[in-house]
Image (cartoon, rainbow, N blue to C red; front, side, top):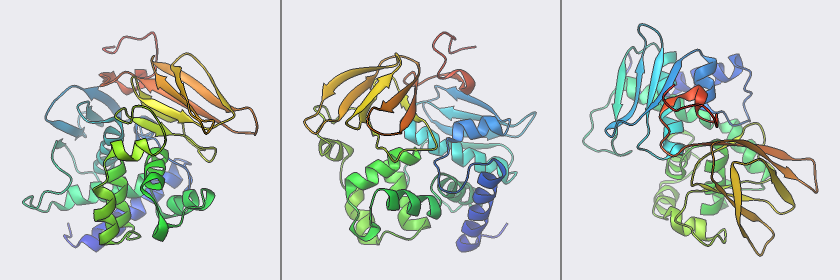
Length: 291
């Protein structure tokens, strides 16, 4: 295998876009890697393994294990990474928890290929441009709150998005990457006006289309003004001065945010915090985690 990073990145890009096309996902909508893994007939499990980020095994049948010790958005990115190992036929791979930037780590072409694939699968350039255009966001003038919204929309972590925009898509400068990376999530969430910015927060807007908002119990979600929630998995906890409503995920299940003033709605799915079990059961309210 080549060790040239540009060549590997191009291979990752082509494979990611081809997979989106093969599975009818389009090039502008978000993709849930958990759903995609199941669509690929990969046996997907969540396990409580403190040192494990993720694992892919090709034998006796394709299987992915996601470690539950990381935040939900990180688990999503890890799943996309493991799908990359599957697409490129890398065989069994065990990815331990480590920092995103480890200067002492040896370069591993297969790991670089899988990581690049994950970024291009979740946030291809066309999808980023489309999402920014709808929200009237200009990358040169982008704010940390804009990046946070986009990370929510594409289902990945704030820092993961920044690194992808800088290293893979090359639309953020090194100065921007360093500046935005230094801003804490708590400080960003506080700018949305919520009373407890320490809690995980997903910010919905009326441009959120093509995928459900995935939460864990205990997460909060900020809903646009003029909307109501239909279902039992969220509980209203705060009404903001600007008209937005803050909900907390309180039960496993699914529901829908519906606008009362325009033709827009968004499905919301809630799984337990650090859910363990088969991925197909993660949102089922009456099924045991261990089945």
